[in-house]
Amino acid sequence: MAMRQFKAESKKLLDLMINSIYTNREIFLRELISNASDACDKRYFKSLTDTSIGITKEDLKIHIQPDKDSRTLTISDNGIGMTKDELEKNLGTIAKSGSLDFKTENQSDNIDIIGQFGVGFYSAFMVASKVTVISRAQGEDTAWQWESKGVEGYTLTEAEKDDVGTDIILVLKEDTDTEKYSEYLDEYTLAGLVKKYSDYIHFPITVYREKSRQKPKPEDAGDDYKPEYETYTELETLNSMVPIWKRPKSEVKDEDYNEFYKSKFMDYSDPLRVITSRTEGTATYTALLFIPGRTPYDYYTKEYEKGLALYASGVMIMEKCADLLPDYFSFVKGVVDSEDLSLNISRETLQKDSQLKLMRNSLEKKIKNELHAMLVNDRDKYETFWKAFGRQIKFGIYGDYGMHKDLLADLLLFYSAKEQKLVTLDEYIEKMPEDQKCIYYAAGDDTDRLGKLPNAQLVLSKGYDLLLCTEDVDEFCLQMMRDYKEKEFKNINSGDLGLETEEEKKAAEETATENKDLFEEIKKALNGKVKEVKVNPTLKEHPVTLSSEGGISMEMEKVLRKMPNGEGVESTKVLELNPSHAVFAALKAAHEAGDTEKVGKYAELLYDQALLIAGLPIEDPVAYAQLVCGLMK
Ligand SMILES: Nc1ncnc2c1ncn2[C@@H]1O[C@H](COP(=O)(O)OP(=O)(O)OP(=O)(O)O)[C@@H](O)[C@H]1O
Image 1 (spheres, rainbow, N blue to C red):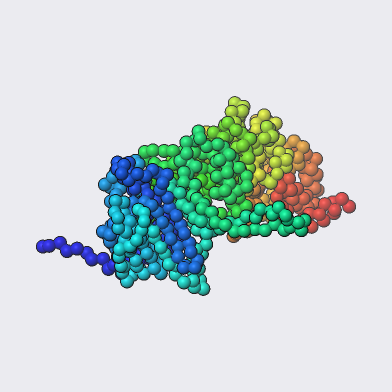
Image 2: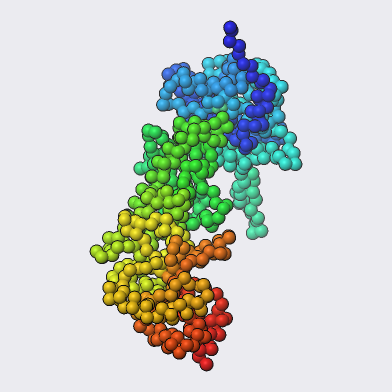
């Protein structure tokens, strides 16, 4: 049975091409410039083996010419051009890519062809009501004109053209209330689009730009001379051609990188660190990344969009490719350029997720290593970084059920109570005395206050250091990690610290048994606010302290309560009393005298005091004040 060919419904296909493939109309310019660049590349490539062509790379260019009077935009190149037959084949057949054929026929490192799908040209119809292509091919004397108003078809006639190359003339559609096609006649808009998408096309893209200058002052000008201005046009090259990330690192000055960063990513300060990376193999790409020196104003809001600019062969594909960066490195800015990305037809996304994944993994490692190198070699800079983005790293540890904790843990810094400065977890561990089992931390609002907590002083008195955690995410991050290098994290106000001596322990047990009734009475008076009242023999000059039991600490309760639906969150509290304090004696005396009211008042007072010491809000400050006054009278 004879195999029948599928017939493409050309009109429908073209309609689809024009209206459905691209989400962003402005890319038509990128597509036409990329075609012109391909044509220049092909001519240059031919000239390498055919000296009769007589051109050098420097001769090849692309020119854009807007004309407001005729409402046309012309994109010209002196590339290889098209014969009548090629015009027919390439522009008369949807999805026929002469460029891809050329690439396949001429495998070489000397050509950097962009076209592959054979559809980009038709994007011109998104903005143009008529497209005219006048082309003269290399080695031909005759030029040909291809013209089309879109879906109805095209004409092909002989034309006049002095030089080899192609002019694409677009008659722009009429403006409507919502669509302003005439913006593509504005030099400023065109220059912006070239910068955005085609800055690294390696042939110059020129436009005549209207400029203004002061006229020379006439010699006979009097005192009342006012400067006069005139407009003139100047041919300007719009693109930088060689991307900074493709230039050898030794040739690029720090200032060049800094300037590139500031202009491309709109920051007024220099980046903290510049990361360059070129990899070959499974994920082949060139990357130029920056660690900013300050937190963008919207960084911790939903408005902030992470991502790296993605280029394929010098053409911008995506301004912010979010998939290239994990959330915990979302502060990184930069560019990734890869020649062998498999793009989808609109060049708006990548076809193969696996490529992105490979690139992302390799970038992640690179960023991690660079941050760690900064931590080791340039601590001041790292601390600036930490101030700006440390919080994000902690979120990274906490997020995704702690999946990334091993990657990120050695980047953490916390404030050390002993050293009075930021330390890494490794630095903390290195200085641990032999008998110290855990990494101690206290969580709250203020380092000074945390350092004065009764248990903080106990830990410090043993010669152990203590991490003072003042960010809301800190404790969540540490709890997610559970331990670091087999040393467990221990909140000094959560559970039993186990730091009392055997004697203290024994004495405490005895006091607890002796005062069982008193403790019951206090617990009752506090009416469910505490789970237990107990003796703490290590309190020294403090009469009382609060600790918590279970997974939610008092600080976590405070943080969670501020979150939506967090009102009901409650930590399980334990009131700990100092049996050697005069206050304890007073409590005992009231209890022994059978003065339940007094015991109740003292209990309230001590509980509120313990909350204040822990930096927690007291439920009823007025009642507290009245209680204090009542006792003073
Ligand atoms: N300015 C030009 N000079 C010479 N040939 C051109 C020019 N513009 C287009 N062509 C030819 O027309 C073909 C079709 O162009 P089109 O833009 O539709 O697709 P493409 O560039 O091959 O692929 P893609 O859809 O990936 O851009 C090109 O492959 C090329 O052979």
